[in-house]
Image 1 (tube, rainbow, N blue to C red):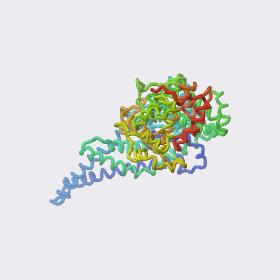
Image 2: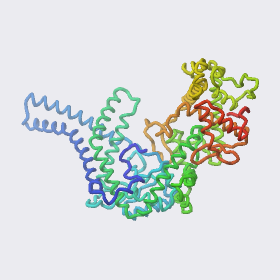
Image 3: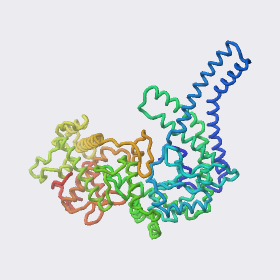
Image 4: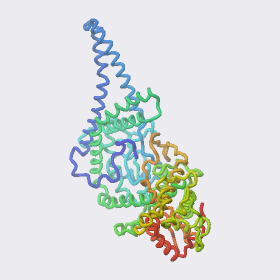
Length: 621
């Protein structure tokens, strides 16, 4: 999540494959060589900026001593001096922007030593075993990764005390060493991993403070981060023509310098990671191999928890306040279902790493709120329309509300399409109101019958011309119904799907914009131009997928209201329907038969077997 490519020296995945077989180019000495190459780019840029001034000084000195006299020399002297002044001014502006532009940082939750003394003690002991400086602070990120991040820029956190670092192999000590970076730890690791596993995973990360402390490497990183920040500043919109031209020049110079040192910077980071991995080889190496399996498992469980469980709550203005605790439940359930994960749950008897925190619940809540902001774009603070929800309340306050909201949207679209709330047949028992039977009859209608529910849409609905033609002339396609793709039910589904998509688009457009700004915890601010969320959790859903979700929601509402079913939470699949306390997983295929093929019989049989009354109106929000 960091905006600078050089902000992290090693990650949780580094170190298991690299190590003793790495040559000098990918070791500490190679990293220093590459750092010097980056600094040479900086020196050459400085030399280019000073060259006209040096020529001007020579010409002025020649004129003062009487050696370079004459009209030609006088003209050259004034021209070069003026050019040098312009170049120096532009160079000073570029240098100032590079030096003072605020590098982007990863939004994190700060963890003070008072809030986690045992965690700080573990990290310091690990650094002592590795013979590297201890990180200056610890922060948590709502992601499955860990890295080191330099926060010594004056615009960021208060300056940390310089840490004394051991010299790199073959490199003499310098009198001045930079401050140690901040250790950023993925919050899901603390809840899922045991203490020994966390220490093993963090070993190659903490080992990165050794190479990071070398002055040449630190200076090269500061230069590259400054270039990144200058490019970001120059790219900000909303300036006048003159300011755009000035910042365009700054951005162009910064990009040119980045191209010149980008390869060297990448090789330097590889060398730093290799050096850190090699240094960590002797610390819990065997356990680290096993712990890496838990890294992959934690990532899988975290991804499922965000996309299947957290996202439905975020969309309705609620955020689960114990996401990290939910990871444990999700991964325990995964280990129960997946044979490849068998045995992982047996580790839960050991001490969890979250015990290293004084108040794990408060930290989990802060990380959960930050996760909602980063991955969904929610506000930075809780409010009336953005409130936390506990796992015990999730089925009632999120799942049931989600179903009824979608069912209400489905019936609003049916109203806009002119679909009647009761059929005209005398044998029908459908009651007026929001019933499941109304939806099933509309989607399974064929031939001329479909035209009854395809009246002119209400004003404001978004039904395109082709869909209207299919409804109005459904009898022309009746011969295609044998294959389930033509006929009135296909047009009915298309029109309904298009209407739901349009309704959702209107709701999203009417939602207030999310203000850009600070995260939580340590007041680390994102670039104002960064869009939120930083990365979408799900790709855009098609109209048919949305229609299937809404029909499923209507089925679940009908089952809850007429058959005594209940909303539930599945840790891996999210909202689920519970009947007699058992999770039902056989609904999806029957809904797809109705939505995709217009065949309502599988769903009708399923409803009849459970005692669900589709003709009864349901309660909507």
